[in-house]
Length: 211
Image (tube, rainbow, N blue to C red; front, side, top):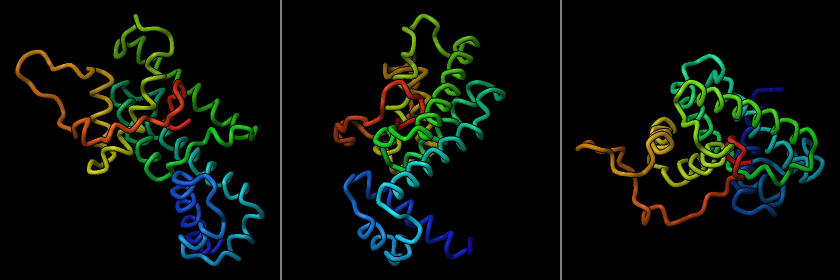
């Protein structure tokens, strides 16, 4: 694929992700216009809106898989791996803000999602076995809490980099929201009023951020 064609495709997919997150009924014509690409070019690449949606969701899973690989969940020290993973998923959530559960009727996407969930669940068991996470919590509790935290960090802390937002998520996950014992202060982040009280849109238990 030529360099300009690759750039056009990336623009269409990233624009499509943003627009579909805001309006799941967004059309190919609207996405092409917002991306600054001729709609005929988009139609030559994608025969239908469903094909474009599948490509957007596939790109999101590519980003999640890359985040998992770069976190080295099986080899890196657990706290280092946790932070790398959370940082990578926050970055993926920001670039690809789509809820992929809408496309889970696609068998290929279901299989990819299942593999990602299994990889993260194995890491969380490792983190528990090595003492980073509590072992007395109900099964699946941490896996249910982590995705909404990452979605909130991606959406509600735009002034923070992905690494800084990951600091907030990891600190919240490991130490909770109570005031630290002693005189030390935790990470400063916007208040609940500043966050607007938006509910997380992640699917609980996936461990991957957005379903």
